[in-house]
Image (cartoon, rainbow, N blue to C red; front, side):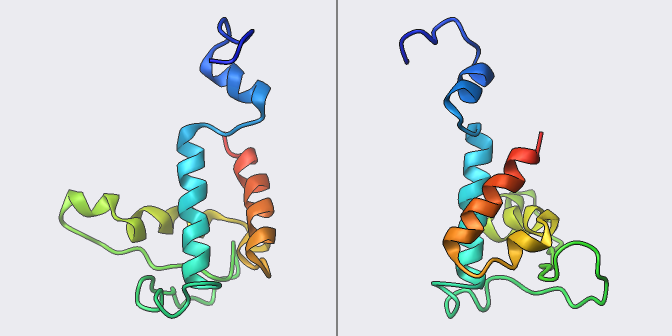
Length: 115
């Protein structure tokens, strides 16, 4: 515990320290890993990991991923299923980032706008 912050709630402490909640930090890590698999470091290993959605719609980002349909509830926790919905909601400028560092800064801006 940080001295002087014992009386503050969890959300107030996070706001005071300029941090995201644990849920947003996990999501941020997952999206960074997805970006690396799709565009940067692990491109070869990630070729079969995600399926790109073929669509002529122009709304949202231009790199949408296809969501799988599963009968088992346990698959909802898989990395590839967990990330797709959030990836498809990202703005175009975040997904089209030229490097990992630019993606991280743009992602932080997009996540700070989430409630």
